[in-house]
Length: 530
Image (cartoon, rainbow, N blue to C red; front, side):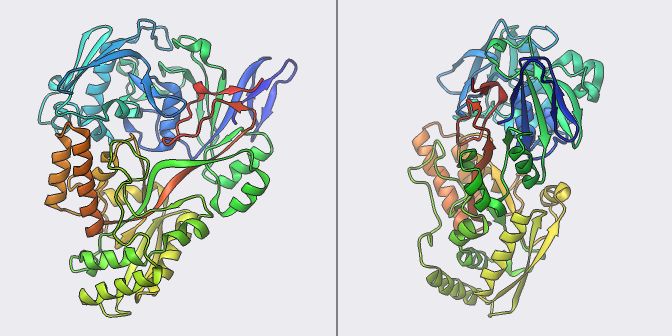
């Protein structure tokens, strides 16, 4: 994976210059990450790659274990009221910040109020909307003092929800649930993330951050479980080019790559089979359908369903993605918790492609679309994988008389464009679950959510989601959410195409790496094989 013991007399590890020069017997791990974080202020982060960094620097009330499960962290225990509305967390008395300060319930109170402060403009504040008055606070309709979070004393934090939320503990494992050191922010403002000023409470503390080179962290000696942390130094190295990370991995300069280039899967499986790790992942790859103009034929659900029917997911998974993705006929990925057995699938799942194409043509005719009269544009963010996916979709649509052209957009601005109601016909999108519950996928198409790229509005759908929100019986709630997904699939506001799998290169010398649905592998759980 990403670490290496440098024994006495060995001091230098080179990766575009020196990656580390450390004392004898110090354990150093070099981890490849998808990209640099846009910020180290976790209230302004939004990506999986940023979440990996935050999981090393901070420790929340709960955290993800080595197997991706929500377990006790800074909170040693908690009580939940009978109505499911009040969570009382009891904090460890040995939890400290990296500067030696005690971690208190007041720190969490400060943090939750900060993320809900409209001035913070936290894009992911909606993650915590189950907290009472959170949504109103973000909108400026209620003061932060009315947020449902209370520091009862230094070691007791009470959180009150607006309605029962069975996935609340899972939700708190996300970076939005991590604490902040109030004094550092008060003294340094937005510069609190600067190396030397940044104070964290996790297994690691920040040493340096050199964009496009690496983030260096060292073990936090004040971490309550420091004796169990086996890696002394971790270097997080950004690799937007997956093939570049693979080359460094083969040269033994990097011990973990967070992803693998799909176009080189034959080589990976042949030459790196023992180090290649692939597992089911809680994520969906899908196509939001919108239509650029008000009179676009894509506004008709029959046309959208016809397009969905024409997409050969099996070919996409096996040929385009070289067997590293799975064909998807639902928005909610398989294996998720708190859902109906077997999940929900589109009605045409399992049907022969030729039969589906015939049905698709019939739907188009019913919608008044004659063969070869409809032209659409397929939008995607820069990536060979996404380009190849959309090219395959375009070829498949020819079979039902639809002409499709490709339009590539630079990745840094792509999702802002989608969120801000930019015009498009069909776009590429993906979602990795922040917590193990179907709501985290189905909320994406609620009418008032910024991630609803299609800007689809359906009162029945919103009503089902609202009903599920206040249903405490998990079985009844699962059925309501399943009804919502059936409606979504029939209306085809989005077209599910693939389920993600996590893919990584992990050195055989690494222990503690457990494949899991959340793809959670914090450095604190890892060690070097002796």
